[in-house]
Figure: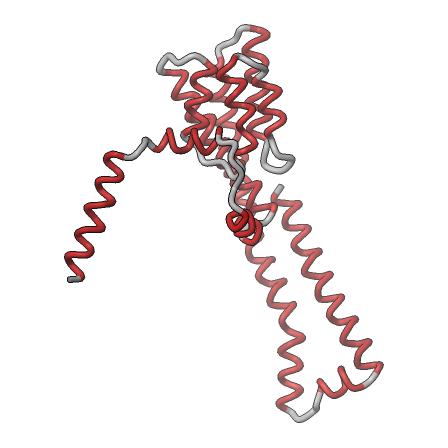
Length: 235
């Protein structure tokens, strides 16, 4: 019974993949769709929203993939507008809705650099801004777009490799800071094991409450400052 059910499910998946729409069409519909998300999907996306640093890193990776896909489309002879549209459908961006004006401008011959600048986020949008500058130079001066896009992709890859190297070097200090932040809790456990009743002092008297508040505040400030310095060094 179990094997028959698995075989039926595998057959259904194979038929759907064979007869279903191409992946590029699905992504293009996702980018150009104007329907609002259901309320439960919007709530889920808010609850699972990544941190700003992780979101910026995702945008940078997507920008590198976009430049590589655009260069490949240009190399096979597509026009810049068609090449950009095809490249956008091949890349998964964190917020596809922001790229709808870019697709519209590329299709209709609009102001693509302005659309790219408007879609670029403040953090992680360096690739889109550099691509907009390349597009503007190609239109104004008449230079080939493919070599400019290749240079942008190379620059973005170098910068991304540098950020990853810095992140690897900062992993140790970040771990040390987290361990130091946990030490006060370990101290309380050791004091309780020695029958010193630290919680009675911390919660049972005004000096204890003041010490508890000050300790938590200093601990939180230390963690925030360490993370702030690491994030600033990584960017």
